[in-house]
Image 1 (cartoon, rainbow, N blue to C red):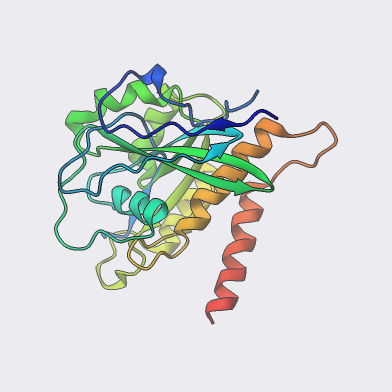
Image 2 (cartoon, rainbow, N blue to C red):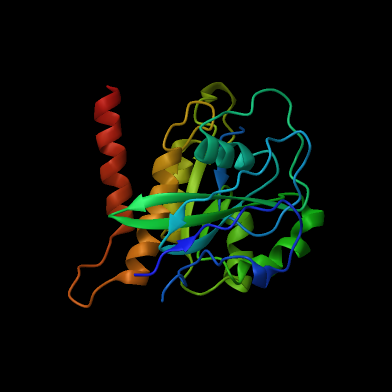
Length: 243
């Protein structure tokens, strides 16, 4: 398998086609609910600089973080990429931003190009253009965004619903039971996350990477990867370890 070198993440705007797709095409609170990741970015001065990656990778996917403004999409991305939490006041994403991270998935170097989208209504027309190339969508508010994903994204896009800000139990706008009910209704995996503590953040992105990698590189006699089962098993294991 030929190996590619991860390109440097750029914070400037660009065309959707220039971005590495994040759906499965890589062949070859407010306790908030968070969706997938879209495309190309404006880097705000108040944020850490977009990190570049010089790591080699075997396969790449584009993942979009989608959800309302203020649900913590950017904090999730920074926690996953840099292992840090953006404390204090924070300016909402303007347009789109992205970061790259290379994961080792079953011995395969998988690069996730993760797009952080603006949740404000006025930026919707900008983000629509990036849905079609996305392989994965991480949602923070499924009801409001799923219709857009069905309209603009690939038919086989990988979806996951997150209930973010799980650490803010006193300030919940979405109860865990409600998140689980919505995920079951729409047939997508669900987990609660916290960018502050790091709860399930690594798991969420790793699960998406595993699903995309298996879809892209599955051998004919290889059993299908079951995303729901993997997520449930890993969360049970983590729960046992914490108790």
